Image (cartoon, rainbow, N blue to C red):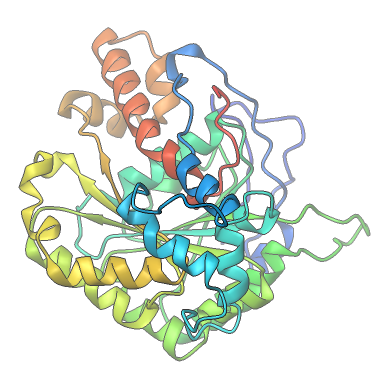
Amino acid sequence: MMIIKIANDNNRNTSNNLADQPFSNTQFNNIAPNNVTEEKTSNTELDSPVPDNTALNNAIKEKTSNTELDSLAPDNIALNNAIEENTRNTQSNNPVSENNNKNNNDKNNPQQLRRLVMVTGDKGGVGKSTFARGLAQTYIDNAVKFVGLDADNSNPHLIRFYEKAANIHRLDISNSDKLDEFVDNLKELVYPKSNESGKNQDEQSLILLETPSQFLPTLKILITEMGFLDVVNNKCKMQVTIVVVISTIIDCINQVLELYSFCGDRVDYIIVKNSFYGEAEQFAFYDNSQKVKEMEQQVKATGHDFTSINMPKLAKKSYDYLDVKNLTFRQGLEQDEYPSVFGRVLSWLNNFKGQIKPKKDLFGIEKILSE
């Protein structure tokens, strides 16, 4: 049985904490909105604005002119064609794919930011939990309200590091009955009913789900047998971003391809190259995979995104210090014991957020506070 607690990032309970409540079969019904104090500390802010697709936008607006599309970035050519020739059959089999494609290209559509972000990495120790923690810290630092679900029962990092800093909950999806329970409760999480006092709770538009290792077979069941993507799209009105953290070994590439075999072009993909395992040039298996290139083209042709980013390496002493002390990345900056830890974590967070920023909409972030 889990007790729901909400606190701020310095481990002090906020004044509007819920009373201790059991996390029962209807555990999502009582989730309160996450109250996060905006932290505009200049040490963690990024100064550079997110580059926009100016060339793409101008090409769409001035399509009656003689301007050629040759100057567009290669990654945007298929997307541009899909916009201008929307009568063609480039949609996926997803019943709501047409709406999803429009959402991906309409920055003013609020549903574009309604996201289920799933952080996966089927090989144990690949860095999945580190990325999930970094993303949670990014949400907190930018005052983004979110709900975290930690399904990694063997190594629940989100729970261990961020349960007191954000709205994080343990998720048990260890058997078929638990999967049904999760799917049913997901809608209640996004669109909560009135509580016993009759007061409506806020709807949730961003969910961060950290999956356990060896999760691919379970995810396949969720999608192929339980219509999970249709539930998220149609019942929760959310889009799905799947984050896949990889190392340099070829098995990670095979897992990306297997994931695509049942998710198809119905989700947005972000492949995270963990720099702990090597420099950028050492991810040759991924970079040179023709099958991955074909997968990327097929996903982008339907208006979804497929991109890769790097996760910086955090020095072992600093990583171990946070691990032993159970500190969030923010608390690593606030501690005074080791200046080296402060410097390392500061650099790591800045680099991490720099990777997130250009694709912030895929993570459900509308605005970086430093913009």
